[in-house]
View 1 (cartoon, rainbow, N blue to C red):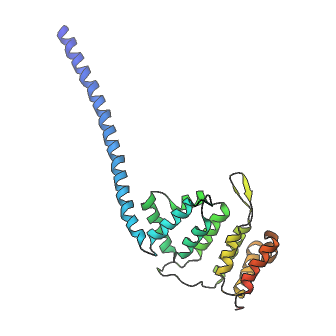
View 2: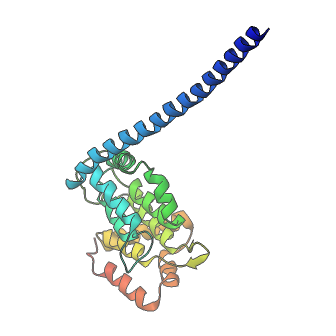
View 3: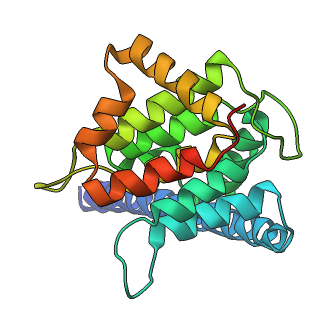
Length: 234
């Protein structure tokens, strides 16, 4: 009787050990998986980081965009929209932008579009999408602005986004004058401005000049219009 009890207790103890070691083994395997994944990500990020020293490639654009998000300058806070706008405008095509998205993921293990949506207001995000939408499908070299109905609509959408009142947290703020100026600087001629005004009216049923006057202070109005007036007529 005692022998049977001893054997049972030994078997029971062995079963408990198996369970404990099994759980421990799973923890070790799981930990090894996460450690291995972290090492792979680190190696991939290091490899991608080396490419950021080359001008005009996807990794460089991805890093410029990340730096615009972080914006650690002492005189500013939050995203540097001008730097972000400049980086996105410099990307020559939609295909290259997709490469930037992939490079950003490799460098920071984060989604570029998710970070952009998180860091920007709705109007700013829409502006960036409008810039991307006008790029050619493929190409690795910067191209001049191609005047077309699609381009006029893009400028109109960006201006509308700049007019829309957005919020940061619970604090409202108004017109994005830098975004308006960026659009005006891109327009090569006065004719392009008037074609954009037509597209604006078709899209929103509003008059662009009237909206500009309503959104800008009187001294800002003069500065903005002078940008257009100093361009060739056609």
